[in-house]
Length: 191
Image (cartoon, rainbow, N blue to C red; front, side, top):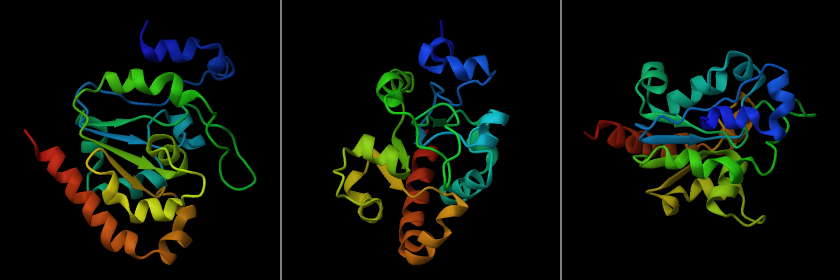
């Protein structure tokens, strides 16, 4: 049984499987860059195509790559902190369910031995992988991204909901995005 089938068969995911939903992730053995985000949006859950929404358009722009590279090159993996759309909250989507990353991520990472960079999108991925203290802000983490290289690169979620954050923190697009693009280009250009 594949990990995909195991995730679908997991009793914890029974309601999603019964609803006809499939887990949304991509873990190609040839991946060189892994993107770890929160959870699929409703639109992504319905299409089954990761980052196939306004957030994904901005993410690809930030990475400096086109859709063909993102979806068809086999060089990009995507693993969310939860494989299913968690539902709507008062503002935005509900958080990913706890325990999903602990249960599945190590096995999925083991399938991608050539990953050279893990891009951590948003608070849930950053807190989990960087072992941040509750007092550490995501803004400070992103500003200090260099301390997590070469393995991890933390960035803000590319959602249009973060336009206010982007306006308040112009250094992100002026300094962090060019560094991200340089790292991505170097890894993808390696033979």
